[in-house]
Image (cartoon, rainbow, N blue to C red; front, side):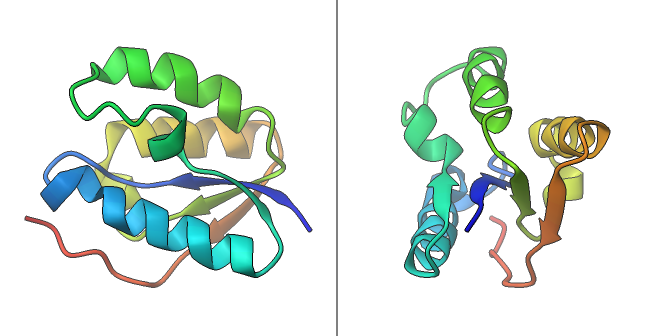
Length: 102
């Protein structure tokens, strides 16, 4: 199985979309994947965006797959993670389960 990074939007979602990140991580772990969940990398909801990205990008670089949550393209951070993953030749998976924005 793969080592997978979960990417998606947080800003504008209830609870910063943490429940959706946890749901996706649990699903892929049940399927046997090793999952890197950025919410677990930095669980502080008050952290600054740049500080989160400084922790998330190194975590992404340890993976071979990135799973893009619905709406990722509206997220500056997820768009950056997507760009990095594509540039490095990682497998990109686009999820279809919807999170509900605020």
